Image 1 (cartoon, one colour):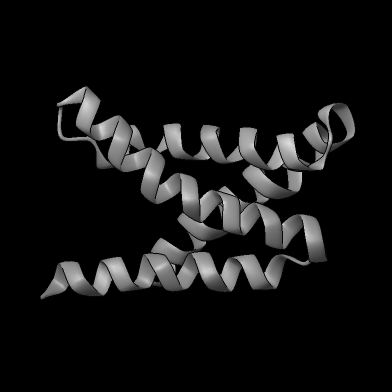
Image 2: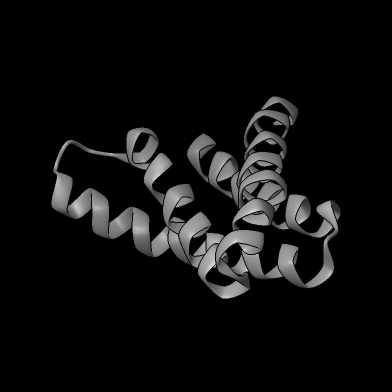
Amino acid sequence: MIVVFAVNALLEEVFYRRWLQTRWEHLIGRRPAIVLASLVFAAWHIGIHGTGHLPTDLATVFVHQGVQGLFLGYLWSRYRLMWPILTVHGAINAGTVLLGML
């Protein structure tokens, strides 16, 4: 569980929010940066959560991870604190891991 948290939540949030979204906010503005970073975040998950049926995979990933990315992106843009987004992302990942163990 700790490895999942460290690899997924920490690395993804440092890259997608702290590094990528922050830079895009300076270039294209706050809202477009949140949306764009969320789309890239979602696209990354196609390889992880994909089933091989691209239309279904795209729809599923962009809805699930895209919405999660929008929320995490908003939290980062609003508060500029890593711990809230790490907590939310870690909790979502932990729930998925725990359900997979059943």
